[in-house]
Length: 228
Image (cartoon, rainbow, N blue to C red; front, side, top):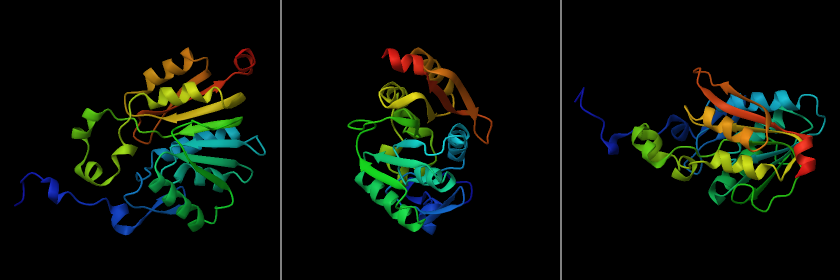
């Protein structure tokens, strides 16, 4: 009946999963329950990355928690010289990302590997980017049912992963390399403070299309790298 609350069993499947695909920065990517659906707000992350790399002929890029491969593939598509490595802990997500690399004709431009965040990786990279899980467990009750019922929880829930990536990235970034992180609404200020405490400079936050600060970035200074 109209006006009755939506029951969990009646929650609609996300349209991207129904259609089996989603558009991200002009790329048409396969979408299914193996990975989080890329959102328009994450396109801002790619914008910020490309801005930092516009004068670098062959930048080495690391995408941590690649999921469907959206960020990694967009970087490869829009920067002809980018050498992209994409990592994810989920073998299912990596399988989807590889399928999307083939689907977009970018399979020879992105190297995929399974791993937990930055563990086992060697640099240096000119840029490390990530849209990690950033929701506390209790926030799941406030999400739309179509998200909590259908999208993988491992891609949703993860506290302080951005700060962990920022700390570990210092061992992989080239001098004056850049770190670009997506975060949840209301988390940018704390994440920016964390980056400054870790030695990053030129730390800033960029808003998403809704006007909320959702992208935090910083520069890993050559002076800090040489002293480490």
